Picture (cartoon, rainbow, N blue to C red):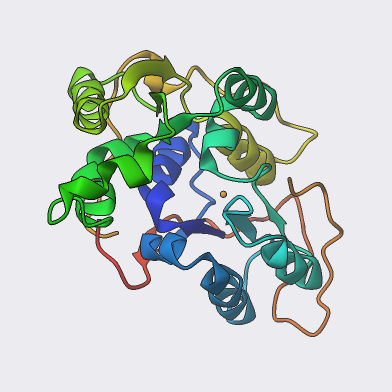
Length: 251
């Protein structure tokens, strides 16, 4: 089972479908938790405590602003997560993102999810629709928007470009695909002895993600029960099921 951030729901299902991973079940926590990152560790803990019957559980979050508190929970359960501090880093690749950020610290990053929901999450979420005079207070120190695209979709690019225009910032697009998200899901599904390079990402071909009806550096940690219902990691005999259950928020 993969316990993921709701902001990654489309990408998680796309990676599962692209790589033919029918043994993975995806469950997502509400994306709105990113507005209150201190609540992420508790929400993940609650889901881990009720997880049972899986050969392996993986958490599709970065640190995501929890200040290491998510890792404390995962260490207790012997569960891994996606590498890096946030989705920008594991989509672009850790070294690539660090170099990009070093080149221009005044960068606002967008993913497909953020480009798609920019108006609701950023413009309305920060109150700029009601108080446009706050624009300089929020974004006065930014220089550019970098859109880290998961799929090659011209309409998504235009949405991201429009967001940059509204903010009065320069625009740059980088097609990064699914990055570490894809590699990590393939790894935990097939195991290191069988893993090769993942197939060419759909991002290279512009194939849209699957339709959703509803709405992730952890290194290798030893998995132990430690009083939890999770079973130790096994690399064979995965439960043959794949679905997405939203826990509290639609797309």
